[in-house]
Length: 121
Image 1 (spheres, rainbow, N blue to C red):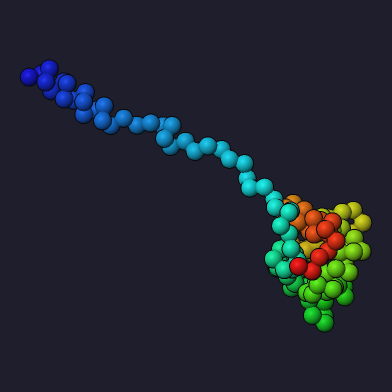
Image 2 (cartoon, rainbow, N blue to C red; image 1 turned 180 degrees about the vertical axis):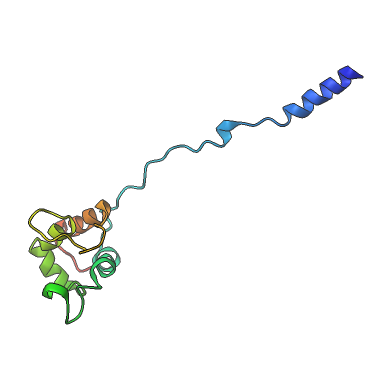
């Protein structure tokens, strides 16, 4: 009788096997920054509106710099000021003022858009 209980117990316990490997998730790299599919309408304008629009839109835009329409943004970008201020380059006022610096990915996207000739797409 004891042997039967012993074997039954071993079978029962073997069914309760736990694999640590089943719970381990592989380490993945963070998603790469997409600088190929950057468009003004889907990336640049919404980004600048969200990050800069509270101070740089409308008639009372801070410092007279408007970032609420394509022509104004293009002008600031062509001068080199846009990339200078968002990347906190020495000699430029760091923007957004009083806010966190834009992510490296967002800065790379702005630079990619500039490098593509500032298309209004």
